[in-house]
Image (cartoon, rainbow, N blue to C red; front, top):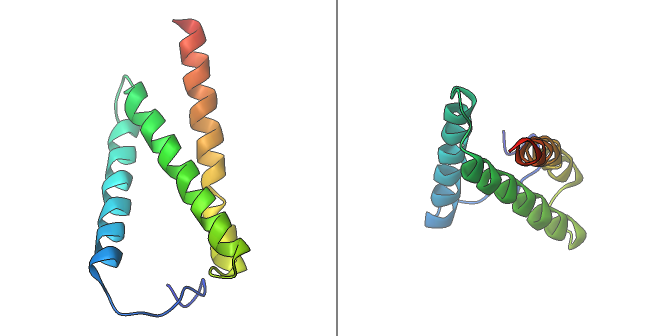
Length: 96
């Protein structure tokens, strides 16, 4: 998969494994949130902030030629989630 999106090839390190674990953990948290009748708003806000930070870091890496255009394009899809989640959170706040 890493070769398809032109990520640099490297050996597994503590940082790589920790990053993968965090991505998996947030993925499980998003799935859990989706199954809840009442959404935990602070957790959703943390998720939106995390995705926004990932996009910003990716944009910086792309701008400094450390990330391929393919990888940057794929991660920019997280902006859709940020927009949806923040829009929903604002709507919920106005209803309260």
